[in-house]
Picture 1 (spheres, each protein chain N blue to C red):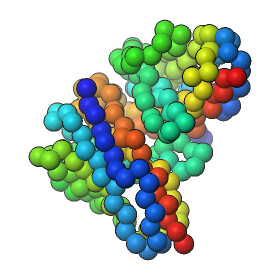
Picture 2: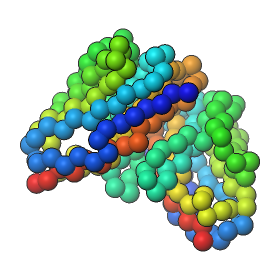
Picture 3: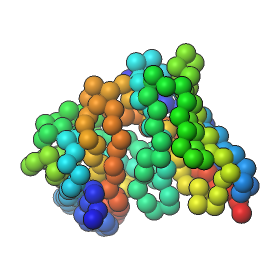
Length: 112
Length: 113
């Protein structure tokens, strides 16, 4: 089955700096890669996703890159703000009624 | 309006009891899920239903039994609760079972004493 590894497990950055979270996956058939943000005590919420036919996607301060050859994808947050503090999960899926496999999460702390 | 709503929000019970968690979505999605999030925040899928049909059944003890009376509802019944069942259980839905975003409910924090 699919295995998704996520690093780092914790990340502290100064407000205004950039943050990068990296994930690797094992199943070369995976073709959908969402990212979820979970604030303390809240539910996970989708912040951005990318499909395997695209190498990069950007939405304001958030961008995701995908390297299919190396089987890794990354989340980039620029100009971090205190409200970006949360746990971020990457995930991978091959579609076709197959499950979404989540990474182990990265706790991001943005220091004002 | 809450898109995916689950009840109760908190559930405290003793070992050996039986309990149920209910979930409803008003998004018109075809697929619903149960996820378990443990104390280390790992998110693990338990079950998935597509149009009331079970499509994913992970390695979950038989004490856990999902039921989907229609595609807008997915309930979870747990028999003979154990200490290790303590976790946050999230219901989720998605437009389809094929690579579409998950919409999570607010979670049910289950504590077994």
